[in-house]
Length: 140
Length: 93
Image (cartoon, rainbow over all chains, first blue to last red; front, side, top):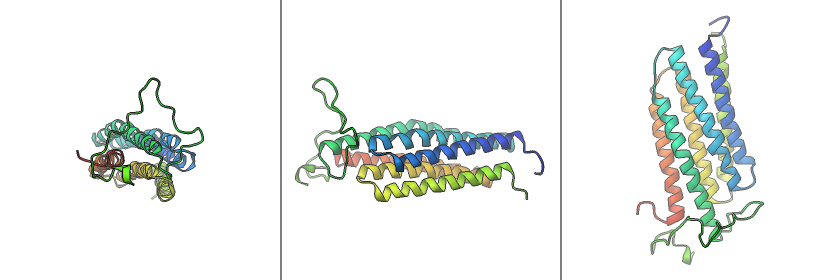
């Protein structure tokens, strides 16, 4: 491969650089941002977009470079796009729940704990734990 | 073998994902609470999926994508199980 690179190589290389850069920025946000609710933004948005770009790069490379049509990457990207918001939602629920139970290892961030929703409702994070299970924080 | 643009992009991708994994590991060790550690583990799984995809492009065979798909599933189930355990004290009710 001497001289000019093919269109498939250029497109694949651009998508790989974009995806890896987004993954790097997402992990940098995980280190740099001050509170957990802000740290959630890094992995769930930037890393997922970066992963999508890398998977599209793989599809493009195998299709244009090798002439093989692969669907595993599309399956992975669809699965990641579906599960990443669910995982982020569950992590945010854990954060709210531990803030409410007053865990000392769970700092609330610069703006304090999130305000409760209007009305008499509360954030739906937790129902009463079963008796005797390790999540029974009453005696801890 | 000349060092083409694709090889350069793959080298950058491997380096960036390695640095990203190191930063996730820092958050995993340092993170003040268990919630940060769950988040760091989830991000590590996503970055390792990216590494496997890049290795599949570099190696030229499509067999590694089954591993990436399995890792995506197992990583999500692990994150959900950790969060569920912190919320309810029980994983399978």
